[in-house]
Length: 314
Image (cartoon, rainbow, N blue to C red; front, side):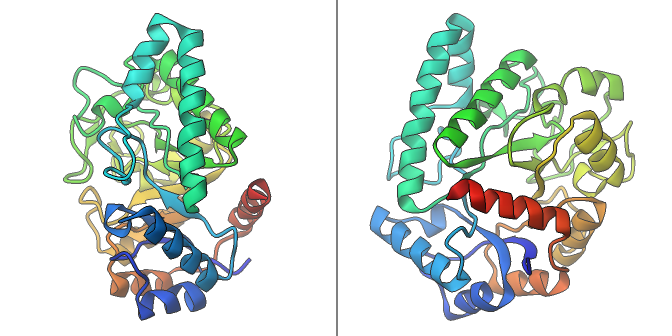
């Protein structure tokens, strides 16, 4: 499968000539759309039809980050005020009722997203809420209780799959212990491996998600030199072995300020460490081209898992 391990992004509500060529000739793995790309239901459908046509792939991964509440790319088009924390709190009061409501909610949201043409939503957030967790996570977390986060996360993936939509668990191996927003600065976590294994890593273990997104966090006592996205040690020994994640591993956005190198170096370091796909969200066409030209084709593992994802969509 001759695809480049890059999720590209675009600037506006229509594809430019250069963006059309990018999709047609350069063969990115997928695309992510943001609020800046989404104006009306008709426009979104037309844009996605165009994207699929130029990629020449009806199963082309088209991704949205539609968590709800503070992270809603469809705000203004749908009323999406539910947060993960709402479901976590409901779970504490009545587990079975909360799961029924979650199932209805995922089914309803999936129906909207599929109707528009999306096939991946970047949920659930599996970070545990702690007293000092940076506010960038906040209500995006299901709970401060690890078992609730894990169970609600597992059911979210189950219900997404029942609706023929894939999810992305994030931010693996856990963002809950970070006091800093990785969009702005590199967070450093000093907890021991044992502590992290008992807490932050727990909700991610043996997830059936097809995709996971890394945390741009320096776990000082595991790899003092590299954030998780750049760490072969964390990806191989923690994410793949200890956590047991078997799907496609996607970097968080490589234009975030937690990463200190230029975009191309960030992308290469992510792939070299063991990320299967690199995510780029800023939408600059020149950077899209620079990145895609600098990367090799996807490896056999990613090709196999991508084929499995295409079959899942049929």
